[in-house]
Amino acid sequence: MNGYESLKSNMNFQNVYKNGVSYANKYLVMYVLENRTDNLRLGISVSKKVGNSIVRHRLTRLIRESVRLNSGSILKGYDIVIIARANLKGKNYADTESALLHLLRLHKILSI
Image (cartoon, rainbow, N blue to C red):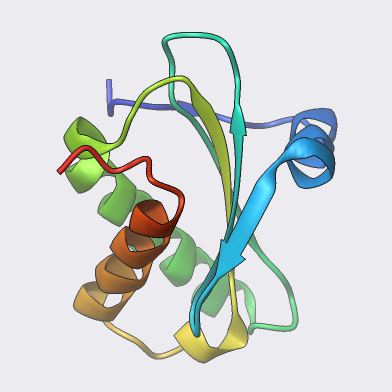
């Protein structure tokens, strides 16, 4: 187990968009909604505007890996949707992780 579950259905994503709180930085937008469970649920969205499927899948993997490696310090009980912005294209893992940690701190769901 990677420390989180995936948000899969469009209904789940829409619920987080509609009722959640969002913060953004240069590379990512993050919506967070309390889910009243003991689980962390994660959804990742990368629009076609960002690039072709190879680029989009690479960014998805970078974001997922950043979350996986930091999942021990992310508070449980939240649904999180992370949206990659076009600026993230071509960036490396360190930039991605830094942007992710910045947003987690803004949302106050980082336990370090």
